[in-house]
Length: 484
Image (cartoon, rainbow, N blue to C red; front, side, top):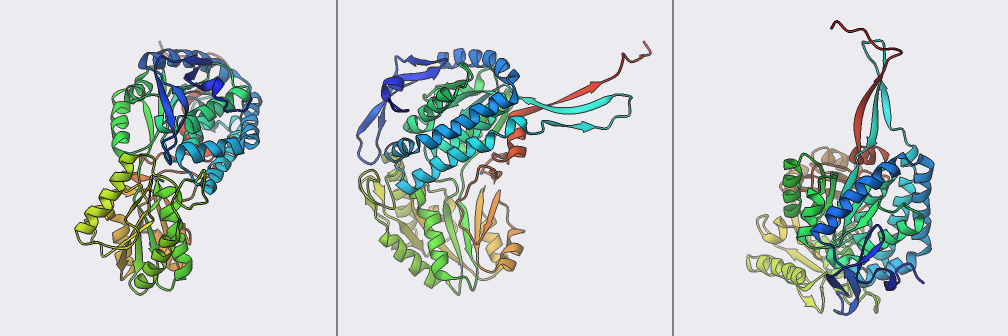
């Protein structure tokens, strides 16, 4: 039996074992519309039961020795390695990933587990000074029950990057994947940790609609919510969490800028720009959504980028060697095309693409834009590269910052000039001589402004901060004397 044999999970959800669900949803391949299987959907009542069970199991799990918890995370990393090919196939078919993107995501999952295996033995606090004759300590303790709500675009890693550190630090987890990628973003994680020896009741997989999303936020046992997804939904979750006095880590959208400085190598810059805009069909929060090119290079750069766009084949990544796979569903495909056509109607010009191609969208380059056009202002979440020019670094900084988002920025060209520009940019991440899409398990990840709450995932310090609470603890050699 394979790791993802549908006999285990078909028509079921995972909560203290696999349970049949009266409500089911087909797993659909976006490239073809073919049915790949059926997942069981949870209800709000299922969430309530799961949260209560998670709170019970979490106390025992938190009391487990650090080495035992680390061993589960290491075994999970080994299992991701052993089953990488099978997992990649699901990422290709269910999420529409091209093969290289699927391999990259599966590799990140392996690294995430091994990185988090170090968390149980990482220092969990500090010794404080005190004016009294006592020891004074600040120690980090598990938050308790953590709800993780993950999106469709990088479904495996964007769920796992919260699930793995939360578990490693002694928490229990309620995982709600996007229903469109419930296998690669949910079943995979549940099966890996089940086989890795995670005790029953510590991890629960709860696919479902908006009512399930609300339930995993509002369950009284939940103390931390980790959400990755759109800014509008993130705002709603943040409002709910604030009302309920819960912490919410919100990693939201982006409209990321790539700045091409004067004197940059145009061929290399266009290659970087194409990768940033077209990887996974532009369906990445870090996608390069705005190309800001010095006026001395803009014509050459646009021509080079358009040539690359025209050469990128679109198709079914499970059956063809293509650069761009399908857009996740028809609604999003039509939204991408609508933003492009609205911008062209407003005066933008197509240098490449601008067409629906089956279930996908041709790699597109837009020029002649003004900064109030939808293709420039909005997060498109499609393979569209809008290009605009600048004259001075001061103007470039102003254009970069004139955006509601602040997730990732790439700067290509002279390092000294790029360093000075980076100091003027409001962004959670800045990459010099790289494009905007980058992630590593040990690096802090997060955005500012409408890209999130500034919370970070990745690396020991950020993960400990995200998934633990600080407790002040004092110790005296004997009972103190008091004046009452």
